[in-house]
Image (cartoon, rainbow, N blue to C red; front, side, top):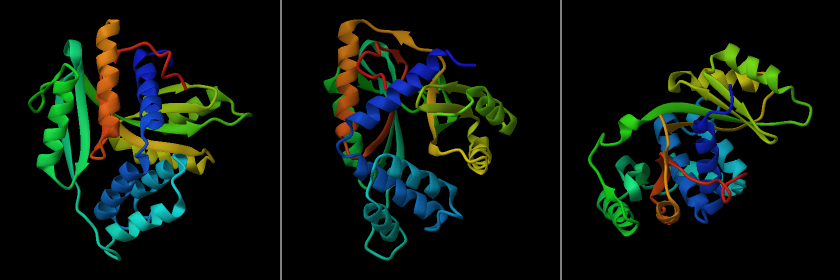
Length: 247
């Protein structure tokens, strides 16, 4: 079930994001805060928080930072309320782009997002202008172990309700419907699998080829979004060379 271009896109986007974020702890801290607000401070009863903690640990975020973010959000320390906002637009060459942000100042974030689009040869669009080109998918990332039987893990994932599967030497990528992400993740955990990440992502229905100049502008745009504290995730449908993004 592997080999789809969407998997290459998912892996490239993930690698680019994880490697480029000097401010990754700030971004994860916001995700932790929102998770606590939505489901409480106990990860045993809050799957979203449990996923955020796993993501934080995978990024080597110190445990003190994790606990501080949880305490702030649960009211034990002063806290800030973050709003989730999604922006849609076009990058250079008409590439479709979705930007997900968590912000305590909508005006500041909207202005920054618009500036980045304009600076990199694109434009901020209206709601739903490109979202129809993407599909919401739950993506569960599992750590690969030396003695794993990849086919066995694939069959386990499919039996649990997964839609698609792809593997590498270090990780397995399991695609599920957003409504099934919790049950599939829990089933994998009960089977002893190490879950590195579990999140809903916007997967392009198809990708578009871009020339070198357009690719350069898209990469610059992604870097600028990565450097912005308010921006959590960026998705696009450009089919770019993977020489810089291979994990």
